[in-house]
Image (cartoon, rainbow, N blue to C red; front, side, top):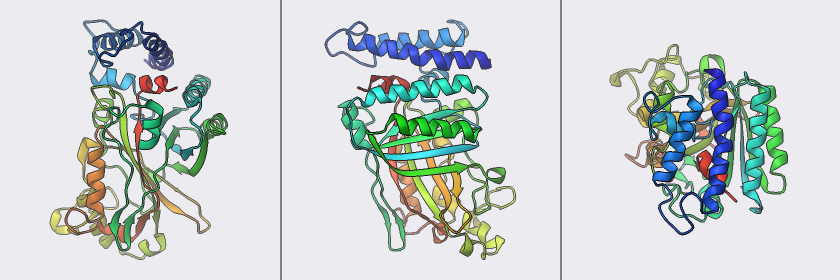
Length: 367
């Protein structure tokens, strides 16, 4: 099964590049207009998925199923078990030959994956609204995407630091991950300016630095993670919407709060993350302000240094619909009922962006 999955990852991207070339040469759907999400592409993706998975009409899920949608998505979206991540947020300074650099990046990723098959290396490349429109010249693609706008008021502010491109690099091994980050920086030299670089890691028992387990209600299993995170139809099938915020914790103040009060603020027990009954938690507890169930996939990780510098959580979530994450943000910052998430008394976001992670098909179409 492992060999089969590796074959699928390595060969599907090559196949999709060839499909893209055929499309641009008018050999798949003709030279003039037409429905660019039509039956021909459906057949191509279906046949490709069946060939890579080694199945046939009788035992292979049809195109549009969670398996086939995931097969054309970037591998870092629904991946599990990564212990480290490196986040790069950047402005695009030169769009010339940008699609070529994306393909070079993908080649490097696949090369490292072949060299270190047990490292679980994977990645996501995503774009802000302005950059995606420039790169695709298509107002209909990712039509939910927008620029992040500031939320909240007074001392409870979610600032906007909207950037053009996001690299969400993930791995089990930090050495392999850092190699990919180095190659990424070299590949895009002269085309981007890195504005934010965050090195993250899973902490004890997948806890945030405030001591509570993070991502308790995350969807479990590939099918559920796919349904939550990936667009399932239309021209953006296999794509995903992202919200990212880097939170800076005030741990000295938080550590002075009794555990019972911490649990009321978060809305869960600290030892095993059991949700508290409504009458035992703050009415504006964190769980009450952020609960989205299986509609989003969270891939947040702690970051920080020990000498008094920044320490906190890089929050990043994926969804098939941007509005779910936007509504959560409005809830946290008092725009739904005037009440703020009580946890914001001890942690503050210092960045904020919305992104769209295109499918592999869309990535390979970029010029």
